[in-house]
Amino acid sequence: MERTRVTVVGSATVVPQADQDTACLLLNHDHLIDTGWNAAINMGRYGGDPMQIDYLFITHCHHDHYIGLPQLLFVHAMWRSRRPDRPPLTVIGPKPDIGMVVERAVHFLRAEQFPDAVTMPKVVALQAGDSYATPRFEVTTAPTVHPVVGLCYRFRDSVTGATLAVTGDTAYRLPLADHVRGVDLLVHEASRGACASHPNDRGGHSGSIDAARIALAGEVRQLGLIHYPSAIRDQVLGAAQEVFPNTVALREGDQFQLG
Image (tube, rainbow, N blue to C red; front, side, top):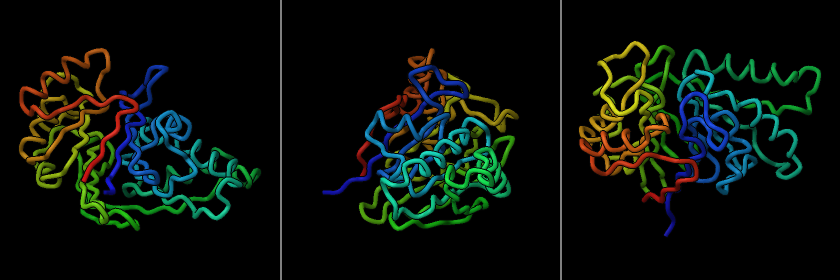
């Protein structure tokens, strides 16, 4: 029976260690959620192939979540012979920032001087509440609480019926529980560590207790903590499990079969 596969490419905070990457997920083989610092290369450690990535979802346009975009575009150009018929990469992200980020990634690669060094992507800019569909997934969005515009994505696999929600960076926001309600796996950031952050924290981040409270209120099946300080992993995980027992602290290479 076919399943929906989620692979953790990166789980670290803003500056990862040498064996890590910043928060980044591979959904099945062709959907990427955020890019980490260098997901195009790092996904290969866990069975991913950057040439198969057709859809890239950016949760928000802070550097550690899109800094790997030029590398992905460059790999698509350098390895185009491996998949000469591949469609342009579709980059989905929040208005108004995503268009600017993609434009500057292309400019960074000096496309006007080296047209063979970059593949031009298609950009889809969404506002919170908008929906989007790929051939495999139905995607809905909700707003997050962060210094830049962010989107919490909910994915439903039209083949398996499996569901996944990814918050991106956000302060504690109880209405997210309605958006993620009942999903098979909720991936929620825990940058603040083993704590509950102040409601509507101005820095726009959550602790693991905040994530657990959203999971509990949303009656999700499993909570995966991401973007947490790896040095205090046990404390981060323990604090969340006291509120929502079916919690895991994600690590690079972890895989989940949903549906």
